[in-house]
Length: 497
Image 1 (cartoon, rainbow, N blue to C red):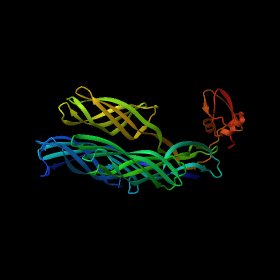
Image 2: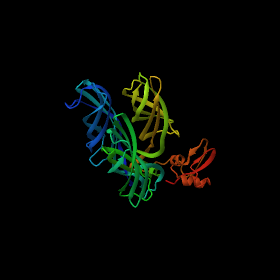
Image 3: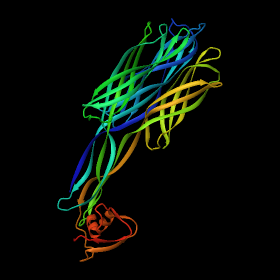
Image 4: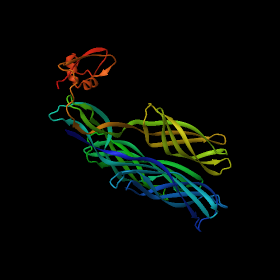
């Protein structure tokens, strides 16, 4: 018997992981710099140099440019010490090859700096890696069986699954010069960049992507620290083979490197090296065989279970949370508040739990500048209850206000939701017909009268008597779409041997 196999081409998500990694180093204060009296805060940006998938793993390497702000001994003005840290991180993923489409987002969760002595500082950078990898896959499933001279009774079933049809990773650059009012005498300490999607359209085999590079800068001025936010709009056009007109496209961004320089005239030159993961998902109709038999001969059927994982966008993740952060001192003013997400888990169908690191930069009642950081896990209620959800591209906004010997935090959470679906199909791999069935002893009897008490599928009845569903429907004047019988007497025609 000939199996009729159908082939489905799609991209399989072979790696989807978020992990946290730490890298540490020691640095000596240069001779031209004064001694350290007190470290105020430390920040950093990651630069990805390589992200190579190969031999069941992804190697991510780069550097972190850590900026340590400290108060020198005997001085009121603050000083900045730049400390580079190199890192190499490995994510294991079975089946990864050099042809895998790999997407890596690396965020600096926190930078901790500790003065070993007045001339030496120890710096630890905590990094969060979001790593996805897709591989092209051809899935073959038996959709029908040709029995030749032996007609078969076949029960088909159709599964609908949403699978990635096209996945591409594209690098691009955003450049701009921004005039910062009142920043002519300032020094740039740190800039954090977040890429936000505005609009995406597909046309003529191209993806037109619009968005903003949102910059959050920390400036050191003679009278203290100042924060500024700027948006740099961008439009990118990517050619994508096989992209249909108007086809929905899911876009994710990752910042690979950020180069910012503040000139004396108060002009901020910005260069953002980024990549975009472009993923189009399509609904696939999988036609498989649930059951089959032959009315005169037994069949030897070999089958294997096949697990297919799909995904589909499930709306937005949005919510707010309020938390308190004890600090052990009274706050006069909050200079800056920021947070980085490094973990999301679904707690129940109505709640996601978001783990984040929150950092505050503030002044105390005595005028001193301090920083503090805490890891918090907050619940976010979902707009619509659902299971098997995963959150992607989580963004956090934090506002803080003095609250006794600490701060009151209000945290806004945004992002996207994906619903992961699991489809189990029974794939027929071989069918062979045995010897003709032995005579049942019914002789010339061609009809069996049977009462069906509880609801029973017509397929099961037909298979047990080695007849056909169509024959049962015809003998009992049942509708063509009748699939079961309940509480009735059935005439069951027996096929001749």
